[in-house]
Image (cartoon, rainbow, N blue to C red):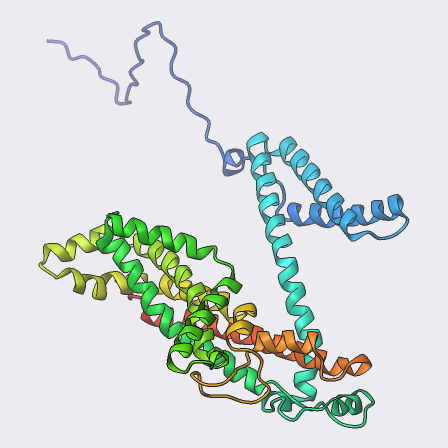
Length: 400
C-alpha cells in the first residue's frame, strides 16, 4: 500500500464560481461625511448685526437722517432675506424655512420686550433719583401739604415735602382684602367646575358668567360696588350715601375683576393634572375630597399660585374702581370699613392731574408720582417673586 504525500501547508479552498458577482464591501463613512452642512454658529447674530448697520445706512440715504421706525423695518426685512438665502444655499429649503420662523419668533419677542424695558427704564430714571435723594417720601403723607412747599423745593430752598406712605398702606390693605375675598371663591369655583360639575347645567351657567365677568370694564365693577354699599348705607343710615366710599367697597370692586381670572387660570391648571392620579387614589378607597386636597391641589399648586399672582397684578394697578369706591385721601387710614382711602394708582393719577402747586412747581408732584410708580412696580415684582418661592416650596417633590 502506497502512502500519499500530504502537504504540511494549509490550503485555501477557492469559492465555487456561481456566476454572481461578490458583494462589495461598504465603505466606512467618517463622522465628517455623515454630518450635514450647517451655517456657522455666529451666522444669525452676524447677519442681524450687519442688517442693523445696513438699515441705519439706508435710513440716512433715504430720509437724510436717522428714522428709527424705517431702520427697524429695513433691518427686519434685510435680516430675513439674507438668512433665508444663505441657509437655502448651504443647508437646504427645510432648514432655511426653520431659520426664518425662528427669526420671526425672536423678533416678535424682542418687539414685545421694547415697551416693557422702556417702561422700566423710564420709571427707574424718573423715580429712582427721587427715592434715593428723598427717601422720606416713603414714610410721609400728603396731609397738610401746601403749594408753597413745592415752590420752595423747585427753587432749591428746601427738600421735597410730602409723600405717599398712606397710598402704600391703602394699596396693601385693599389688595389683601380683595385676595381674601377672591382667592377662596375663585379656587373653590374652579374645583367644582373640574371635579364635580361634569358639564351639568349649573357648571355651564357658571362658566358662561365667568366668561362674561372677564370682559367687564373696571369702572363698571367700581360702580357696582359703590351702588351695593350705597344701598346698604342708605338702609342702615338714610342720607349717608357718602359713607359708601370705603376701602372694603374698593376691595369688593377689585374682587369682581379678580375672581374670573382666578377661576379661569385655576380651572385650566386643574385640568392638566393627570386623571391617573385621581383614579389611583379612588382605587385605594380614598374619598374624593381627600384626593383633591392631598393629590390634585399639591400637584397643581405652582400653576394656581401663578394664576393668583397674575390676578393680583391685574387689579393692583386699577385706578377707576378705586376712584369710585374709595375716593382720594391725603391722610393715613388703616380702617377698611370707614373713611376714604388712597392707593398708589389713584395717588399717581391725582398727582399728575391735580398737582399741589400749578405751573413750574408742578414738577414736585410729578416727581412724587414717578417715585410712587416705581414703588408700585417693585411691589408687583416682589409679589411675583414671593409666589414663585411659595410654589417651589409647596410643589411635590419628585421621586427617584
